[in-house]
Length: 286
Image (cartoon, rainbow, N blue to C red):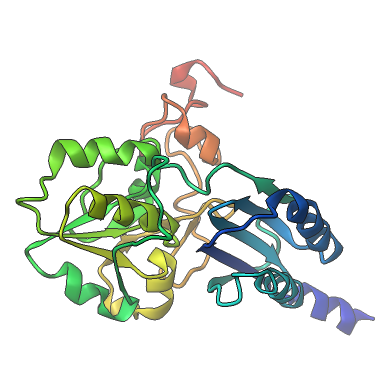
């Protein structure tokens, strides 16, 4: 009995992140079925469905996560969907959610990654691309994500929402001057939209880190890495280090010590590295 309990305690849960832009016509019918299939396997997390595709991050036992991924890939158009896997000692989500949305991620209704996107750069070739002095390297993530960590030499647009990125580009970049632009995000999905939009604005060479930061950290040895800091993730881990292990450094506010949830980081009172809305100085103390 004790051996069985020890074995149970040693189970490492898988965390799978995935997305694919592909037309999905049965979102409303599929969503409740997929949610029940997650519940049946004790797989937690959030999956978004839209007419333009799917985006999700889930956690569970390796067997449970593998079964959900198999179910998703059995859907028409998703047979070749890729995913990225990291690990944790237990669940990193509190419940199973499958939501139907008008769009997976909003950057304007005219942006369609199913038509064209920027040039994919495998993680093994990313260092070479961003070392080119002619390349403008842009972090497409929100400011609180950038604060946790980013690539050497990357520009921080200091945006609170992804849909504010076009305003930054229009104010700071010029297609006639900035011939080469490289963009990156956590898992790749934001760059599908941002690089598609950049091409529509007339930028000639637009590059996209394939699989995002998570794939880079997984594939590029730390001693060769141009990544600095932790990678912010939208689950209970808050941040992961270069080995994709949960990082305590990204979790807590240096001002009051409270856990920095995404909601707190998005609040107007939040100042990265200094304070959050729960700091006593802001009038809210427990």
